[in-house]
Length: 213
Image (cartoon, rainbow, N blue to C red; front, side, top):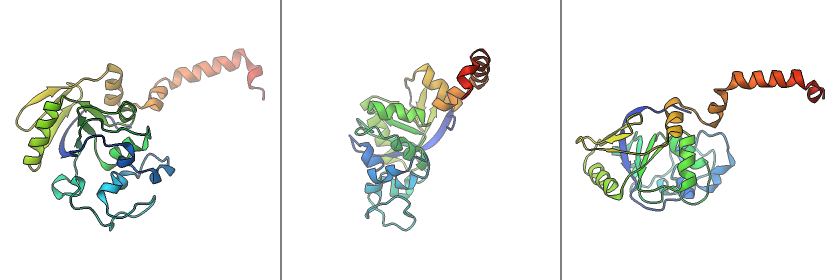
């Protein structure tokens, strides 16, 4: 996965609570496990006015002009502002795949569903929990200011607004290490590749009968 250190990214406000994973990436798109190509279908039922199917070319699909991701001022956004309980519902990992593939690197909300929260870290998307008061402030400033960007510094664990307001966020040392170094669970295993090979060689030498088949 992509390493994350710091971004100064355009923010996009999705002003609704309890957005579930079926809204993030509808069930018909779960047939693929490629982990890529889901960005065009992110929030499919809210972004488009027709029914989406896997493999569909979204270039000329009719879009909902009222949906925030379709507004010109938010094109290229990297920071998603959300409300309470974002990512609730089923545990589908396709949801963070779609968010990351669309281009979001950070999500800020008062709360996230537990499994979605964990899956986001594993796929290079940084979920930041902030108080409702702070999130309200970010929404108001973002909606009032076109081109509103947030500076997110993972090493310092801070988010800074264009006005200079800054707040700290929590993250475990393990998750921080993985994000900074771009290590998912496979990557963490491959860090120990030489040790694994050495163990396998020793195991084969001391118990060769296990390998005769």
